[in-house]
Length: 304
Ligand SMILES: [Zn+2]
Image (tube, rainbow, N blue to C red; front, side, top):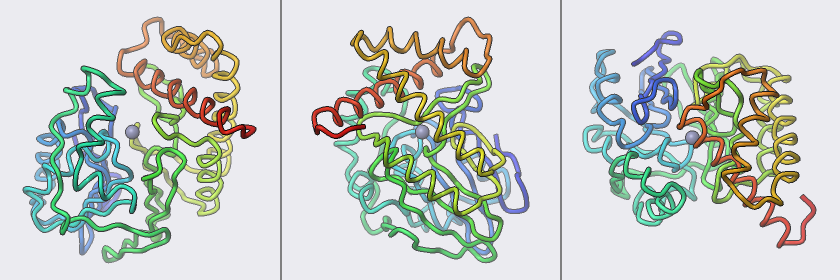
């Protein structure tokens, strides 16, 4: 499903894994067109039919921008480029090699998700001549809309945010917590394998200074932006780090995830008995990513 946010700015619900309001992509139509994130490879048909439904042929796409190479954001880029033949894929310099040769990325995803990974769809490599890296603060003009890329490596070392300067819209990628209508808590974006707590705090402080008006969040949808929204994200991360630190002794990820679901429900006043599977999986990943971070900072002897 595609929703018009304003002239030339659209939100695509990629219907990830058949679930509504789980993974969003954003489409910008100006003199040039850009798709920001693609969703999973298994969402390709939804993506193509949504793009066509506003009268745009995929061959008219100029840019496919991936905020990072995790498969819920970049999974469909390789198969999309086969019809979006004129598009350039733009990514963080550290993401490019994974887009050109996704072998390592796929095995890392299989390690983290196990059998569930098959549902994400087949990740196709992108021809190297169709991928370009974007440096921090690099800009691309679409016409009236102007995009500025911001390297934000706390969530993952290959992560960028995209700031649309004319409207002050920030396409956040996974710098911002996820929230889902079926269990409306805010899930911190602390996923494995390389989540960096300090890095993400710095990212949030830097993005706050841009003073965006709206946040275009992949998980899920448009949020009003303000200083207090960013401060809320920072305090959520601090609370989450303390919570996981206090629970980590049990050493059992499933138990910690159960406790985390309860603690998040309490914190956000949510009264849902059954946590939907896909939300529980998101919370479990956030647990694992923070546990990994705490372990790495302990072995590096660095005070976290
Ligand atoms: Zn994501």
